[in-house]
Length: 385
Length: 136
Image (cartoon, rainbow over all chains, first blue to last red; front, side, top):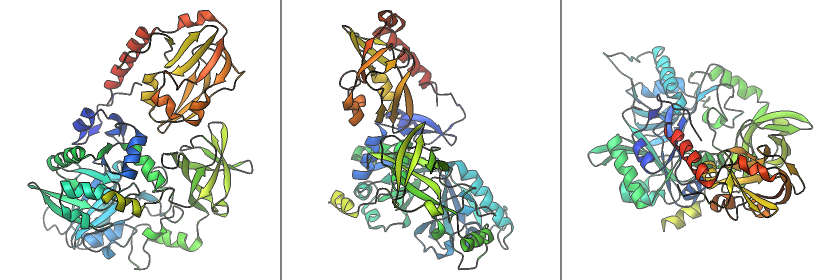
């Protein structure tokens, strides 16, 4: 089916490899990205059962460097990143003054004074500008050419980013990068040499499986991508990335969370640190919301009837529309449709059933616990042996 | 791309119809299933339903998206393929065979003249594919 030519789309350093592999390319957040290679379900299952890899170079990559880096990030982000140990990462939120979610970046602490902030593709510039604007109000934080003591280094252009995910990811990564990666703990991050290049590697991901994310130069990244493909890691597109993260009930910015949603109703209160008393943007509003409580909650819905609940479908209770679906789709693992939506708190009980209007047809769905599909430790061990 | 079987006719909506005496079988094409990707749900009219050429007769959903199904000929539904209702992936694996959708009793034999031959359909989709290649 014809797609609109969009000459302004950005291409990742792996774009020609995706094309050569026959990937279907779609526009996404201003980038030309592979949506699928062989098929979404096959790629999805490869990640659940073995290992798959994703080009996630469209994600924002902002290094924050210098002695005030930690206090600068603390003033911008909801999570107390000063608590992150060196060589660790943590999920965080960047909020506005009302406590609405501007983005949900992952922050890695390489050492005492170096951090990597990975944000959504559509928010990369905004994240950088927001963090820079916080710096302006902080004492001892200069961002100008001379006398620099904290620097924001936007490395989206100069690097690429690959996610290698699945129960067998550790084995493949050990063979291609080195055995030391297998010893990394969950949410650990480190820098390793590869050929003449430096790799940033973390044991994180967005699929609900064990896995790694790599940030490095285009040359090193292309070599790694090719080598992983030769070893048998399945190249996966954005289609499988979405079905995997939905099964893991991981929020997607722009769908499940945005500036009109707050962390508490999204079930992300665990990423908001109020106890340290440190000021950060949105703190007052978030403290108030926490104290007052929320009147809606992001919940997980599983379809009972056949049919696919998608974004925007209306949820009905007693003949009244009570919510629209934030994220919905088909779960290849469960063989049924799954969705996330904000339901009024008094209705959001596990086991509660609702009608969902799927293009004029009503299908029944039930509120279930998150995640829809749990990470399987046994599977990881059997795949590794 | 492989050639479409020349024992049937095709619509520009990527459905095929194969006439067999006074009944006909309807399905979607290899090209359509490839464009849709993994099919997870097919909604078809019941036996006895009257369908009208080029009008919507049902829905087909893949992991990616939902698409309307259009009938390539008017008639009365004799049978909906129960196999594709319970195993929608059949439409992906065998769209021209076991993944058929409906058997109908056509009401107007002349309607097939408005449909494409296999060769014309192959030319049509190769142009669509070229359009797509101009994309990102």
